[in-house]
Image (cartoon, rainbow, N blue to C red; front, side):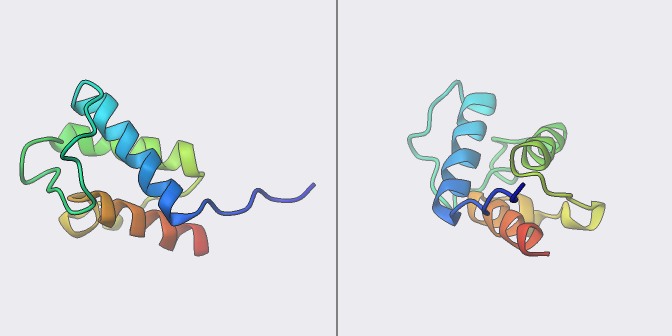
Length: 90
């Protein structure tokens, strides 16, 4: 039984964008770019960060540590995508 290949970064970004849009913006992806501030703009609050982390862990089968939960990693779709990429390669 072979392991599933790691998802392409573009697909990781698309899946995270879709989750954030559906969970926090009533499905609206417009204006939700790679560098759109999520936490500092109020799109995602502190409880929402936990929801996003749980999604990442379930969807991509990665482990996100407490030290990973930072503004640098969780404030943008790009930061979340990079976090997943790092965890997948670890």
